[in-house]
Image 1 (cartoon, helix red, strand yellow):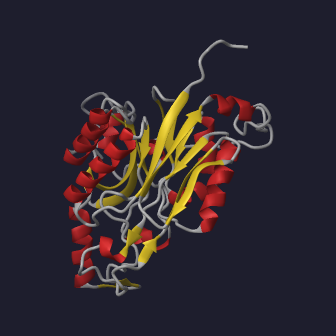
Image 2 (spheres, rainbow, N blue to C red):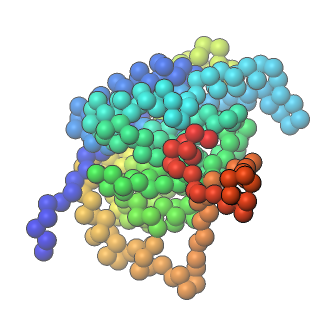
Image 3 (cartoon, rainbow, N blue to C red):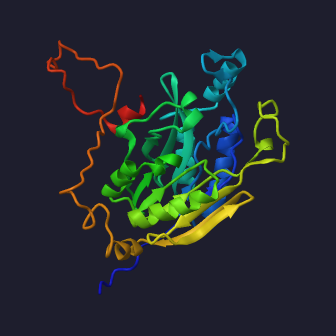
Length: 333
């Protein structure tokens, strides 16, 4: 038996509402929530989908088939103005928050890229470095009206001092091929920021944990109508709960080790023994000994999908090929 000490990761999942459509106030709130999580001993803190600065629940943005209203365009403008550039001042602030408390941070943001908004998860190291980002591949239903589609270039699993860290957003977790891609990268700390508060989500997260033999950390918002601006076009009582939560942490055998929590803002804590991953893979490794590559194979295109490709014929690049862009260059798109 190995004499190595077990690797324990102290993790926290935050269930809370942003200050919707107010980026700076939301960043202030994120700083306080991370402080609370770190005070409880967390080394890894996960915040919900679209936390900076809104999941626009219930709004139509004035759109019907064949028509968009001026008021809806103005609301989209407000959404745009409360979103973040990656990299940019907001990511600098978030990196500073992670660095101040010495924690790894995963947080959902609405990212501006050219003229499009993306639902994105950002991953920061304990020294504040932006380790990677994931743009949601497939916005769900009416989300497609306001969010663009990510591509295969932002589906990383990153090495950290805590373990191999990745993020899959909300209903992407119902895409079996995407899950398989994450498992094949050896994800250990599988973060699932979401906006789905249904009880069935809990069963889904337990399934993912058992299937991937990884720890799953799912953070959802707890929101009331009063968390949105007074003039937000949603005619319900101020105290009506729009998202009750159901945040949780699950083990590599699919067991709940924190949560699910509903009905209030909260921070869930758990100690994760990464050795439980190898114990789980003893009898099931979906991307290893339990795979059947002679029968099934998955091909993943991780190249950035750009609408315009520039070939400089005067620089010797006449073949139309070029070096793959750096991670930072991809962030600047």
